[in-house]
Amino acid sequence: MKKIFIDDGSTGIKLAWKNESGEVQTALTNNTFKKELSPPTGEAEVYNYRCSGEDFSFSPMSTSIVMTNNVQWQYSAANAVAIQHALQKSGLKPQRIHALVTLPLSEFYDHNNQPNLANIERKKASVAQSVEFLSGNAFIIEAVSVSPESIPAAVAKVSELTDLDALLVVDLGGTTLDVSLIQGETASLVKVEGNANIGASSVTREVDQALRTVNGQSSWRIADAIVKNRHNDGFIANRLFNEENVPAIKESLDRSITSLCNATTDFLTRFGGFTHVAVVGGGASLVADSVKSALKISDKRFFVSDDPQFDLVRGMLYISGE
Ligand SMILES: Nc1ncnc2c1ncn2[C@@H]1O[C@H](COP(=O)(O)OP(=O)(O)OP(=O)(O)O)[C@@H](O)[C@H]1O
Ligand SMILES: [Mg+2]
Image 1: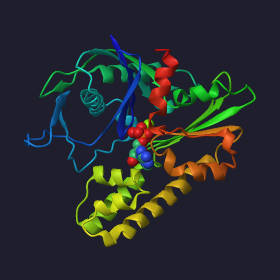
Image 2 (image 1 turned 120 degrees about the vertical axis):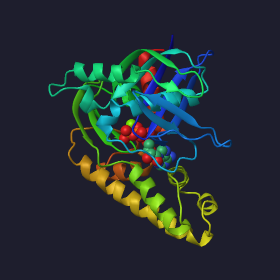
Image 3 (image 1 turned 90 degrees about the vertical axis):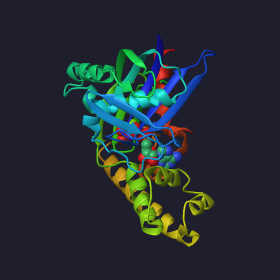
């Protein structure tokens, strides 16, 4: 049975698996969906799903994103549907699979830092619930394994450290900032804290609003693309009805990125005792420079990968020894 590693974040699902030649493949889908079925348009493909009596549709043209509270999302029908949708879009043939998913640290561990077995079982049941794909065959999730977020993202780095070192892993996702302090060598967890009010989607939201002001309309997908291409003025200009509004969009980017950086570095003042820092998650590139200078960490003790949104899911695959 094929093993598929799944980082089911609240704004996007990241997948990793190995193809027949043993090469690592990855895929990303955004959780842009509505809680109703979409009529076929004849143009864009429509993805309608049904799970636990609820209807959902993902469509490339969705103008809204259902924002889910991080914790509730983890065990919801919407989560099971978002995973099914990511599988459908991966290019893999619908089949029986072993899904390896994650839970936020605060859900995975109890107050005594022991695995919270009730939450882990709840997550397994949620991911395994059957999802109907209304225009084709669905993937069947036959086995589910659950691992804690964050640690896999940095595991390759931790193994290079000594027991006198400690790595601070700063995971900035779309809706949550999760920070963990990990002891070098043994990779044991020293301290974990998250803040569900700090996330990279605050930048997308602000750009979405600025687009509505200057264009009279917007979509989450376009706003997100502008955030990702924020250094490319030509790209921004092409998304505007009037190119003279480029500075207004750039101003909204600067303002929201600055406030995201300030919120992130403020939160990090709760942590001490680290010798190395890794910034991971889709929002990493937005805050990495601020984090590095606020924490006064030198280049050789500071890690940001080329593709930080995939650090966690790639780390899960790496640890599994697949
Ligand atoms: N190249 C990029 N530059 C800036 N922001 C980016 C980039 N790539 C992704 N993002 C942002 O990262 C966020 C998604 O990151 P990620 O996939 O780590 O979040 P998530 O796991 O879904 O959320 P969470 O961990 O909070 O549940 C989105 O807000 C997206 O706009
Ligand atoms: Mg995440």
